[in-house]
Length: 372
Ligand SMILES: Cc1cc2nc3c(=O)[nH]c(=O)nc-3n(C[C@H](O)[C@H](O)[C@H](O)COP(=O)(O)O)c2cc1C
Image (tube, rainbow, N blue to C red):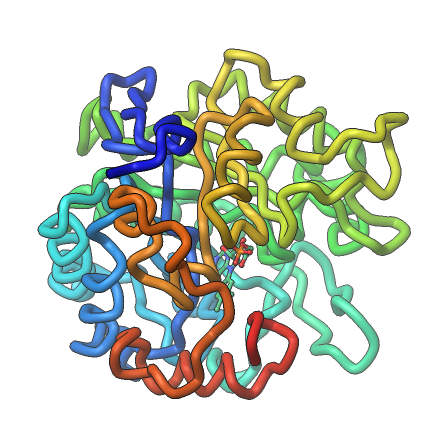
């Protein structure tokens, strides 16, 4: 029997659009490097998701690129053409068959795209590399900017046709949408850059394009979330003050949720606010009841999860821990939270159902996962 202390994790959650999740635990979006070269999903990848879709209320997929030149990783599945709809559908069906909602994460890698994946044509808001020794991107023309905004809408239409319950707009982790918001990456002087307001124009136009696709091809039950990283370390770079302004603008867009991307749920602001609380708490307070906030970051134990929920966010996402222990939710539900594994067991790849490319990526990056 479940320990009563953990019951709040298992309360259902109803979005403002009426869609209900069976509990408060979400699988965080995680790239797995395991798709076919033609952009279709593989059997191994499907099995990896099936293994993790039974306990959680909602699964957010690895990111998929909305245009060919947005592909950010080898082995990433594609969402940039109608030919990919059967592949996208296969993944949505596999997740939903296990009882979870399926959310497709849509993105463009911008200046972080490896040149060999895009014939060397790496693009961004401006021609500023993300660091020393990094690729110098080509500045997008205004026609190309408009076209990528439309592409986010097109991939949303494909997600609807493929049977997803929603999409998550990936505005985090330094990729193209964040690059437009960033005073580091974006040095444009047209309508897409300059003031804080103009840096917000691209992210907000992407939201409008996605919402338009939903209005035309779907209905209110289709979930639209937005993920962002609250700060950048560089100067110039995104500050908490910038992010609170973005959060206000996003809150006015009738999104279904906002997802704060941090590696530690309790990480604190670097600059831009006089506040010693965690970034997630500050953002959650700012948003109020306008839109639900999803928190994430280094949640490993049942107690970590309860403590995170007690901060006031209605939803929490788990990434690495669901690779380490795919039975995490079920163990808590069955009162076996003491059996949760919190360090990767390097002998259990088969039992954990992790495809080789992801397994190798994890093993080759010491310090990334507990136990490695
Ligand atoms: C293997 C791996 C792949 C990831 N890929 C993505 C991704 O495609 N999109 C994204 O928004 N975040 C990605 N992330 C970040 C996670 O969603 C999450 O924010 C982060 O791992 C912190 O949560 P955790 O401590 O529960 O793992 C990835 C993380 C890992 C470990």
